[in-house]
Image 1 (tube, one colour):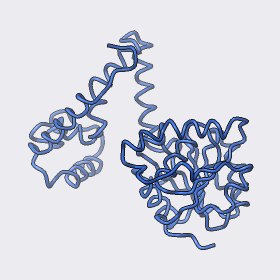
Image 2 (image 1 turned 120 degrees about the vertical axis):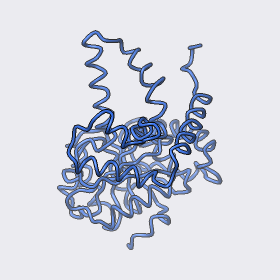
Image 3 (image 1 turned 135 degrees about the vertical axis):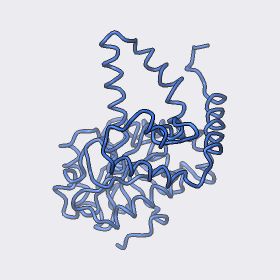
Image 4 (image 1 turned 90 degrees about the vertical axis):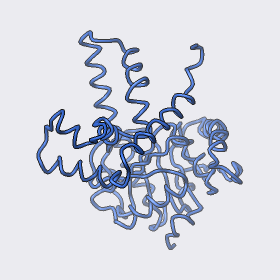
Length: 305
């Protein structure tokens, strides 16, 4: 079997169901792929179809399911049956490292040597997951965020034995089904976005524990404050905009810089690469327009005025 170009990889297997696995199945179906799933849970097929049906109207509203069909979904009787003809496998079993290591060993034995094997792991090192595979070079992390059918980010992480061409292939494949990928320069537990989330939540829990605020206050502080901006700008861009007309350079001069000169130059260089072609007035206008989209479009939780 020769590995097809990522955009032409039509046979996709989802191993392990649940909310993440079925969400992935919906994404692949919406992108016009043939999807076969395996899940040892007694209600695995019914649960998967229910989640796919739940996701489908949202995928249609986003224009990601035009001309696609849920009829291209099939449930397999075993993992081996699911992966035997797959071009790409997305594993979404429970987040237990020992289970995933065993599962990757079994998938590696059952799938063609050219099939790319990806894990939805939220924390584990791919070097560990590929450690018992005969073909570790085709194992990669493709970490999504729930709901996996809506949130676009996929973190692609290579293990010590993952081939560079597999990392590139997986990134293009995810982009071809509507995802936004970022590739880590090196593997680290919990990757990037989860590590950022964990830092914020640990500080939130500390503030509550110290009697500064309540957990409801934490959510209000984030959703009515920086969370609105982070949805489209991110902390680096917000740091730059926080400097007013002087941008990131004024921000550093005014508030100081705790890291070394090299790190400061890297930050300034990154901001210049992203926004050096824009006048700060144009960037502020872009920020304000996006904030208006957020403020006008957000809905309150059910039952709240």
